[in-house]
Length: 631
Ligand code: GLN
Image 1 (cartoon, helix red, strand yellow):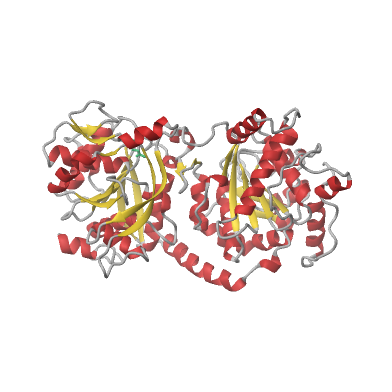
Image 2 (spheres, rainbow, N blue to C red):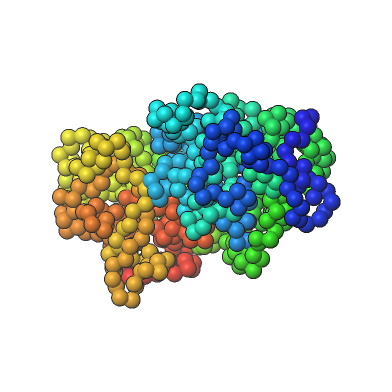
């Protein structure tokens, strides 16, 4: 067992074992004190550790979550749940994910291998875990909250070319770790946009022992040393196996995994044990003993019905209190706020886990239908609605490559609604168009997302306007009627190095439309009574759009473009009056759905599906004006 060299840990452990409250005793020397004693500055010494201007040491605390044993344990869920608890206590939190891969962002990653690409309001393309943070915290993140090894190295190489390392040989330590620490401190200063962070939650991608994330672990070890006592709380997320043949839990893998972390100089303050069933005391005792962590700081994080139960489960076990003690944060907590935040959340979770809810089935067409992670945000957006509309939504994934006008009725039988989600490339597109046609002609509720918006336009042009050759130039470059095409504006962006229209944009909603009904319910700016246009914020990731020269023709045929770009002729939302629910967005509404603020286009779809399957059911007012007025 390596000696405990971490001053933060030795103090906090002592305090917990005595059971006393945080105190103001004089702190042991911190890393920077040691450096100051040596008469050197952090920037020029061997301890190169760039600190952003204006950074106040001791102001910000850091919780770092490391994976051990294996990946896929839900570090993001753990970290965001804990962050949520602390945010609920009035603290400003800022999450950051450190990815080990060399890609600059997630834009080029195959969602089939890596899960969906999540797009932030500022246009950053990142890991789907950022979606977990945004949803759990109900907080918009920025590109600063997502770091890849590729970003770190490319910035270092740029600095090196500019001579910014003053003749030094540039090394993993201190330069690479220094840049990582700089990023962590920058996130601390940026906070949540409203103020600097009280606590930064650092999720280290991968598993302790991987080559890829070793420099992140080292950077965090250094950061804790430099920031000093009470500033960092290290969490080892581990896994307790339960081989079916043995029928009992075994902690050896967890012990070995945590040991890898300790070999890297990181002594965890908290161990969180993922497991299928609640962890047995004997397993937790062994883990506590072998990892130097008091038993009251070893927690069972076993599987729950819903991830949204985890914050309350953590609270019930006292995990949040232990973290506050380790970070000496009890004094910054606001308990009144905490009670309000919990009540709303509990109601949401209760509705989500009620067993006796009515059921609906929604089909989702998609190339990556084999992998649920590829559509994680759609899954979540639907889940949010299912709580607010008291229903269980079964998602049925539909591979469209073999769907034609002839077999589509069979493929979509038993469905109460259909989502055609975003996608790229030609595969399965004709099948999706057949699905849209079926939904339009048979009054099956339809929600089109990005590509689903574009195929709705193509289908309408072909079958309602008689433009048989209607298509997108993405699929048939020289089609006779390119109703969806890459616009000159987009081509200009590409010449500047960008590839897509990415990130948050305002959408102007036309009064008196289904869009105005849906978004008017949730938008304070809606101006419903005055019937004035209002704007909503959506997130985009696309290259093609409706060719403006076809807009008049499409609208004369009965399609209504109810959402538009504030200045340019870019169509953003469409609908078909007279249909119970036919709505599509050029954006990705699933990216902005939050548990307590479900996305209106999804609410409309699920409510219409409920109304179709259970005609007497109450859909919380989300369908009445549409279904009854236009049926
Ligand atoms: N492939 C289409 C485009 O680039 C749709 C993109 C998407 O669905 N995200 O415009």
